[in-house]
Length: 125
Image (cartoon, rainbow, N blue to C red; front, side):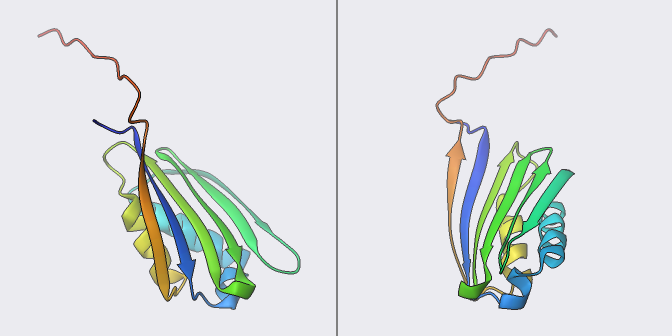
């Protein structure tokens, strides 16, 4: 059955504190990850916590990318949700692993919208 979207839930471990605590750096990496995957970036918002940590979301035409960091643990929780066939969420995840300098990524893909009956479109020739 065809899915409406692909949702990758990724856990990045072994990332440097300085990267995971730098809101501007995270924003830059996340936007570039979306573009690397072929997505069209619409909006983004990020928040820096005190004493450390960053959360943010990139809204893309195809859905979203989100991140929550725990710099003191070298850990980032990442969601990459894409709809349609033109954007590959794994391209974004691989970009994130490289640019967050993660030692390890544990990820799983969930197909979204598989139980929805899609309308059939009549084509007049």
